[in-house]
Image (cartoon, rainbow, N blue to C red; front, side):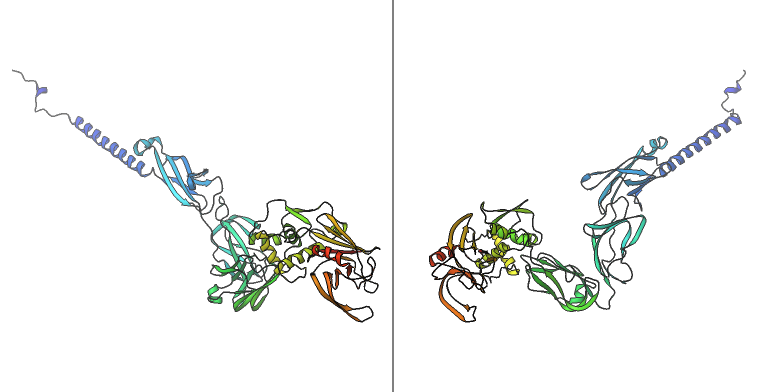
Amino acid sequence: MTQDSSTDPGTSPEPGTSRGLKIALVAGGVVAILLVGFAVAAFAMSGASLGSDPGALARIETQAFGGSVESVHATGPGGKPIPVAVHGGRLVPKRQLRPGQTISVDVVVKRPALVGWLVGSEEEKHLTLRAPVARVRSRWLTVDPSRPPRIHFDRPVRSVAYGTPGNLTHRTFSHPHSSVSLGAQEAAGTVVIAAAPRSWERLGTPQSVTWFPASGSPSVAASPAPGADVSPATPLRLTFSKPVGKVLGSALPTLSPDASGHWQRVDSHTLLFRPSGYGAGLSTDLEAELPKPVDVIAADGSLHRGRSIAWTIPPGSTLRLQQLLAEQGYLPVDWKPDGGAVARTPSAELRAAVEPPKGHFSWRYGNVPSGLREAWSAGKENAATEGAIKMFEDQHEMEIDGSAGAEVWDALLKASIAGEHNAEHGYSYVSVSETLPEQVTLWHDGKTIFTAAANTGIPGAETELGTFSVFEHLEETTMSGENPDGSHYEDPGIMWVSYFNGGDALHAFDRPSYGSPQSLGCVEMQLEDAAKVWPYTPVGTLVTIES
């Protein structure tokens, strides 16, 4: 029987077939290893990072398989969008931001499709940061007077603005600066300075910087400068070259005259007096007395050793004085502001006293005598204003001099705030004509209410021509003086007397006749006529003597 050897289970395969299988297996393993290696490498090199940048808002960087930036979304406080441009991975705001502002940045990076299936098609990055802030390293500088002051910052800046509020010098730099020269300045002074560390930032919060000339002792710079005119509401700032505690100890300056308000330390080097109420009042010489002597920097930058710093509080303006007197009824004119009325507070009234509001005056009456019209002019000293001051002084029990000093201003402002008004009823004016027959005319509230014969001064004792205001109002008095021949006279029991110019007065006097020069300078009337005129001639009433 014949046996088929191909079916013999003991027969071995050919050697070439075994080697091919082995090669295939090895090749498959290598490919698998390569694929795994590629996957590992792709995963390792597909990342992106979002971080800070020395010039931009932030920087986004991607690795070899990181892909490209798909979107950038930046928001400020309250989620307000901030438009951002991307240049070479640098994120730059398209509008200026505020230094110190908190910003959230979200970036989406799209990976290449080749690795996207393996590690994800997108990657999201988030960063919260603050826009940088530049601060002055030292706010109190001691400088060589021959060199300009230089201000140093705690980080480089790209732009600055310095000077006084409303008058700033702006500078922008092509590259960051760590310090800025103020250029030629006085030997001592103060500026406010604001800076921005980045080109895409607005200027930051202004800081004050004060410089002092080099001195062997502590010095003080006053603002306003010593000797300057100030208002009662002006804060007084004293800035010392050394900390206040080292210069003065625990004591504070004292003001003379005493002014309502208080001192406070606003920082380690600075004392500030904040006036309250009416401060030291208008028309006052104000002086701050320091507990210890220091080098006081004068307005011209020179130094002098001392303990006192003085300012001048000038009187209020004549225009505002007239506005107040008109509002309170002491003038024959009314005043109305063009805008809103001045607030009835001490600070508002004090500001208005120095800077009068705009408005217009108008006569209170339709029929005004020419002499009275000539006695009034807005914004200028005149007889009508002097008479109004005297009337105000009389009603407030002050010394009557017709001058608006500190006491008058203080009382006027308080009266304005309280809404007070002239206690007299209406407005009177007296004219005396020396044309024969001489006579007195009484005008009141737009009407001539009385005319009577009168006597004026004889040659050698003439009644002075002009417009004057009554300064003393007496029902009865004794008159005495000297006659033209040098003899002395004394007349008791003179009735209905209104003194208006030195010893000249409107009054009653018994004469055989009236209407011609017979007196020693006074304006004499019959008893019954003087009695009618007298109630209308209180202190402050204008009297015009005309030829």
